[in-house]
Length: 147
Image 1: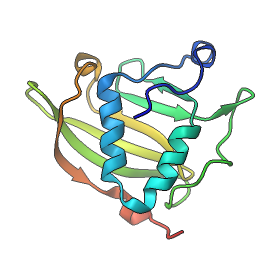
Image 2 (image 1 turned 180 degrees about the vertical axis):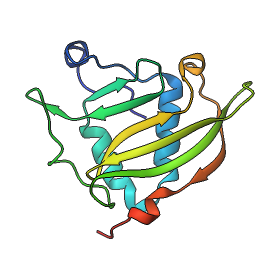
Image 3 (image 1 turned 30 degrees about the vertical axis):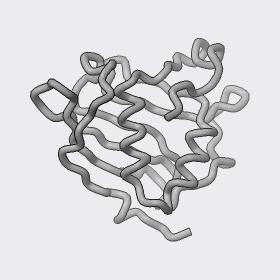
């Protein structure tokens, strides 16, 4: 899974970040949980996105494609879902040795993967890679558009 989005200069200039191990694991869970029809677009988008920004409280990550200082999405292969803000996947995961679940929601905006949000800070779990999926809801089904 890609951990670096964009150059160090773009990250420095745009308050970008490298993904932590737990964030990488969540992105891998998302990709694998989505149906095969989404995989070509997800792979192409992950390769084309060049800026990751983490929420200050570690409650989410947002991904962008920045070209000449502007957000540009039109040349990315679109996800087979509706336009607008679309919830793609909701899941509850458990980090190894931790008591409660972490609820994670993955989003797309205008057919481009946008990122995920969590109900608790991921900072205490940032080094975790062993995550167990407890529940999963495929929200993309209500927003699916065949390609």
